[in-house]
Length: 189
Image 1 (cartoon, helix red, strand yellow):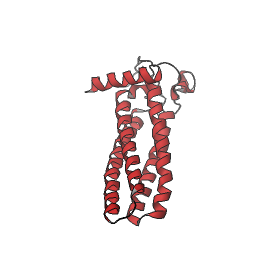
Image 2 (cartoon, helix red, strand yellow):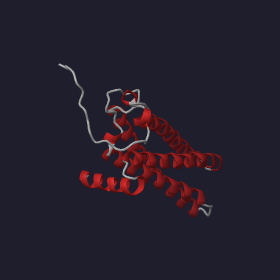
Image 3 (cartoon, one colour):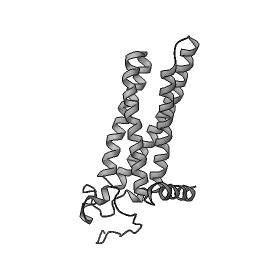
């Protein structure tokens, strides 16, 4: 499964991003950020027009996704340690599962509103956005898992974002992928 996923994501990187898996990861992340903005904006409508239970679920999911966007952007741009990337991957998977559950909840709200004769287009839109966010986050976690070595700092400098190796180029999507790894030198006993 891991090899097939790696081959598939390499194919995606070759066909969409000129062979750069870092650009694929960054592009996928930017699409998650855009959808998160849309979900955050629809929360205002939900809070102003729906019940307190539906408003709470929309507000809570917005708080979670904004936190994920801020923390994820920090990990993608600056903190490239294995613990930060691993925590980020776990957070992405958990948020993906949250949005799958929200998809099911919003479908239930839509059915209830249909049964009562009320308009349910807003709930169906929220369900669609939740499903899209779930799929984007889940696929992003898979891509990040397959290519996490492209994010990890290879210089042992977790806060400089690779600045010790020639500037901030390793914190962005610039440059070609490099599959070499230099182990740390020194006496660690």
